[in-house]
Structures are given as C-alpha cells and as structure tokens.
Length: 184
Image (cartoon, rainbow, N blue to C red; front, top):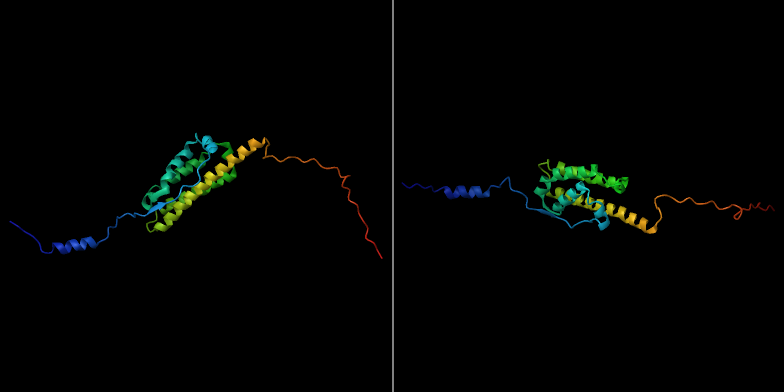
C-alpha cells in the first residue's frame, strides 16, 4: 500500500522561513594584543599564580565570539577578583597599582552583569570586551612602569623615594637691603 500527500512541499517551505530562536551570533570580537610585561616584571611575577591564570585566560578574549565572551564572563570575573585580592609582591602593593586592579575588576563585573541581560546588544558586549582588554593592558603598563622605575633607581644608586634634606644657605651672603623711598 502506497500513500503520499500533495501538501508536503508547502509545509517544508513554511518551516524554512521560520527563524531559529537558538541561533548564535557568529560575530567575533577581534582586538590587537595590548602591552605585555617586560622581562624584569615577568620574572618577578612568575610565582604569582593568580596573575598567570588571568593572563592565560584573558588571551582568549583577544579573538572571541559574543556568545563565548558572555559565557566566560563569570569565570573571568572570579579570576580577576582572586588576582586583585592576592597581591603578594611588595612593590605592586601601592595605591596606583591597586586602583588599576579595582577598575579592571569592576569592568569584569559589568561584563558578568551583561551576560544576565537577554536583550544586550552585540555592540555593547564588544565595547565592554575591548574596554576590559584596554584596562588589562593598562595594568601591565603600570607594572612595567614600577619595574622600570626600580631599575632606574638601582642604576642611579640613589634612593629616589625619599627627599634629600637641603642645607640652609647662610643669610649673610644674601642680605636684603632695605631702601627708604625718597620724598621730594
């Protein structure tokens, strides 16, 4: 027994026109690599596991899809928080460095919040990822500056952090003479 339907072609066309609600955005966020650590800084930070974890993980964000960026936002935030809370290196435990870590953490929190917003635009996510990468580059730049200053200070063999006390000049050599105005 053979059966067939004449309306099958119409039903197939109708299904092809529906949009898949689960389709993922194929837009990729591509950024150029930011500032990397100089060799002296890299050597000093080699034992700081939390920094290395963030450094390894953030490399994926230089070329990532919108979906992956949002999906990995929570992990990125937790890694940055661990890094920020575990500064073990004395030369980096100063306000100018800590501020940069805090700003980076705030931006990762923002990206994590974006992952919970269903109507977030691809452009907003792309801008936020670019901002996070720029801030990570700024953190590396500040770390490099700290180690360059330390190297310069070592080369000068002078402590540039403490001010020199200047001896007072004797006042006799530069005695101020007072003149009276002439009256006519």
